[in-house]
Length: 480
Image: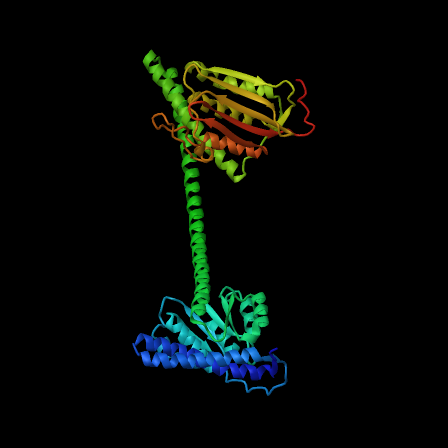
């Protein structure tokens, strides 16, 4: 049975450190000899490296660290920012490399040099810090993608440096890789719990070093891209809000400026026959002009109503509503249009419906808009049905307008309720709406606490439906 001999932790650390450096330097010399075609040097250096690894293995297999008092090492000289450890010539060659900027933190000069040169050979720009405070100063002054942090250091050890990095909002997103000896795996686990990204055991295996540093670097780069995209999104969103405000202000100004002269034009045309007699053709043209003007005025008023509903500035005039009267009023308003196209209008209101409390004008306009759209897109000899009944959802009344018209593709269901949202008909590509009526319907229904939707199959017709909550204990109006 193999006997494990205890050694003070500091002594065991001091034994391993020069061997790790010998292994690191000899591995790099082997690579350099191979690159330069010096096979004899490569062979001899390989023997040195192998012997060092065997000796390190013997130490790891036969000794364990124990807590023992040891002389307190003299604290290393704290470097001012302007007196940082100079980078090696090899490191300087890649100082402006786009591959990433790394910070190596270790109080042992040999360890720093081996690791820095390894990373420089892999294409990274590397800076070194001789102790924990020096590392924090450099992090506060510069920009780094990954930190490689030794655990055992005088003054500020790796735990304290890691703690301060993760407590700083500006630094906490920099991945930290802990540098550990063979006997420090418990310490590594503690660092991972504190927020370290990964660890590297000594001596540094080139393949593992490349893989773990590369993974951390990519994570940092991905987060930087996310932050940049989020900032751009914020700027674009603010710019969009500003443009929407300008658009709305311009729209409101134009609408208000249009309504007054348009009302005057309609009134003037309607009084032409008062000035003098008009013939049949002139009377027909006057009717066309008045009808077109009233249509345009209706669109302007709808847009104003939509703007007020969106801004929450339109107050609903609540009062008890008899649903049979509401349905009859809406049907009566569109009946001439349906008759002109040869369409059948069907009204079906359940007898058991309660009185509804709501804004009668807004709900009637909602039904008129839905019925008008159905008439517009239903061919002659078709039918349109207005149905009002108790909803399957308790406490709600459901309204539906079903037609036998062209139908709407499913992908357009969400767009048709948007302001100025238009849907092209499959027949000739004509627009299905101006994009105001259905927006008004949606906002008016939602202002009552209900919701609106549509079911449709192209070529088979559409069913627009909405629900309105029934107020509790609504009393019918007193008879006049």
